[in-house]
Image (cartoon, rainbow, N blue to C red):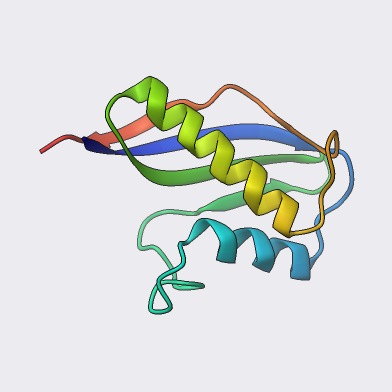
Length: 104
């Protein structure tokens, strides 16, 4: 098992407001009460270009390999945007990319 940083680019078919953004961030930062909503040093978890309707989501996941890590990150992103009120088709995620790895 290793720790992977996965970057997921995508498109939002409707704008993201402050409440939805906070819901996405809370969902991807874990369920540990000490970590929910906590800032992750040196990692901008969600970047949104409102004018273009695009986003980049960066997640750290534990997985056996990069393929499993990408799948886990996509599932987490889907769940996070769902919790923020986005429905099928309102968020189009691109291919996940491994941007960091720690297998030690």
